[in-house]
Image (cartoon, rainbow, N blue to C red; front, side, top):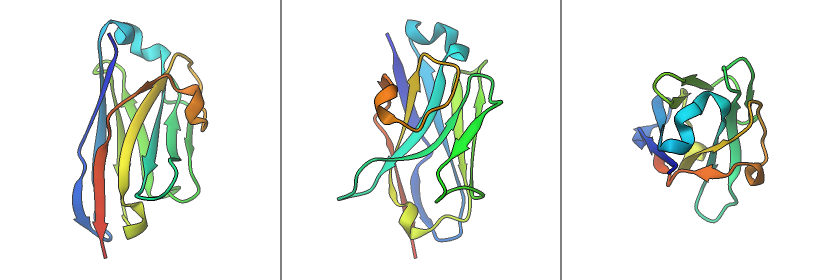
Length: 127
């Protein structure tokens, strides 16, 4: 009924760029515009951390300090897809990146407030 599928991860060198996509499908997301979406990441041995979030129209965006100025979150509601453009990648950005959605038009950094989660896509940045 509700599925989020991430794609776009891979192995890159420091300084490179990647664009992650999060595609929503299923009846639950028939009104995808009503959902706020966030990106989170989890590196081996570390806790999951907030990366970025976007409101229903994209008018409000929030970023973790560690990615501000390097990452850009955006969305295409017609395609039910949210993007994370990552630039100037660093080895410390290496992690599994997950997108998450909640039935709320705003943004939040709290993982517990997101109901729907994707399986994640691996991003590995070599030095």
